[in-house]
Image (cartoon, rainbow, N blue to C red):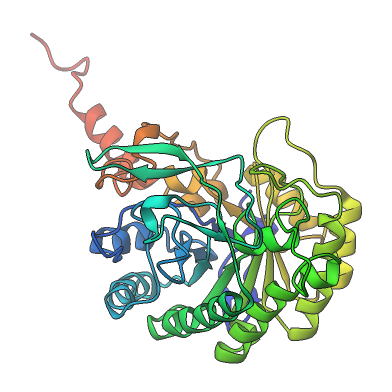
Length: 385
């Protein structure tokens, strides 16, 4: 893999990525409580992975209303911005680049996060889904999402403003750009799909109307920080969480043309990563490439070779890796030199907790040093009893 295109540099928005291996956004729930503030431990975690072409942070709520899981970080208070500054400084000191993924979960939430007990959504339809919530006993559990409250038009305007302010906060915190989370059944995706959007006003019905909310968000954020610092994540083929809609592909392809007109830096496709997941067709990839002149990032069940092959095809520009990067902080180095990969050792450490299962995964050079040290202690033929 040493000479693979996977390790070529590429311009992305306002910076140059040193390679095409991206750290995918992964919720890890390690913030300081009770105010969801990023910590020194989080700064260490991201800095360990700064050899990525660029880092996309875990999803970060734009407001208290946008929260759906315990201990996820925010980007709407001065304390949160200060916490994120530690993260960006640590990554930049390690010569990395990092963008903040901003989200509003919409109906993918729980009553305990809301004063009135009600998440919000385009329509009052509960998802067939669960979220991770830490109870009063300190134990995290997956719990059902309730029926949400339908957003008013004023609510929608307020959320667009929240996105604008969060994007401004992210730039203040030192991020190289932001990614709007528009996939995986969260609020923007809920507006895009007929299964979750039953509105009869200008935000529902036709594809054009269902795209109105995402376009208002993208335009507001682009106006605030510049479109060349903005990416968006989409999930055209993922139908979990009650998101099945045969018009989803048409909606996303139309949106991609509009994103191109605005000059967005990239589109990030969240692809299903289970073994029997639906395949993303070359026809869709070709249509997206024709519609959008910026970079295309994909995240799915890719290896170094399948990722490199897809880049070689010319249909995408970057491959984002999640679990592999979680367990291998030096993933680009391991890929480049065809080295073995660590596996995730304890799934219970994925959400919440401390350094265990978070910052204690070793680099290959550290593992090699330990192995060499262990070998040097073994008796040799010259050492007699």
